[in-house]
Image 1 (cartoon, rainbow, N blue to C red):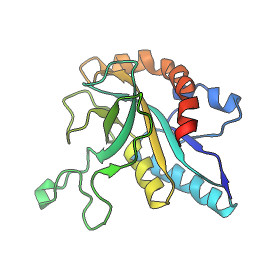
Image 2 (image 1 turned 30 degrees about the vertical axis):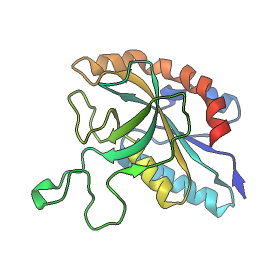
Image 3 (image 1 turned 180 degrees about the horizontal axis):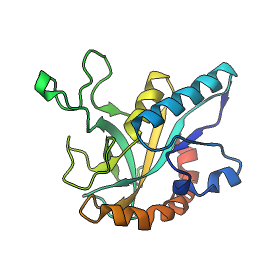
Image 4 (image 1 turned 180 degrees about the vertical axis):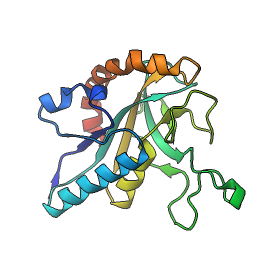
Length: 195
């Protein structure tokens, strides 16, 4: 048996309890790849054990982008680890050695009304040019996508662009973080139709 969906976000400020107030469960992981992977894996394991594995994991979160406009929603369909760099050992940037998971994780695109992004995830706040041909930068999505794919649960990620990944990114993120929740609530009806 499956439940509907599991919404995942790093911070409560990204969603402002709007989903929980509507009876939709949300998993908050905290910031960073390790937190994201740990808390999602733990929750999927728990749900599987009680026969309630969700039919999909939906990540709503904030991100920076030097390409997309501030306040824009972007559906990410490709994910890379921008800080996985073992190039001195002869491995391509983004490749985790000795595992079969590809360096670029790809999921189906579902929302044709939104632009599509390539999300570069890393444990640093991106305020420069970025790496690995990403056009959206966050700190959790790659880990969430990887856990979902390894657990056999479909994954989708929609990012609210808070900043331009530039010298003022930290100020813009702080100013725009609270604006994300309304955008996610507005798009959720469309997400629920396609997932």
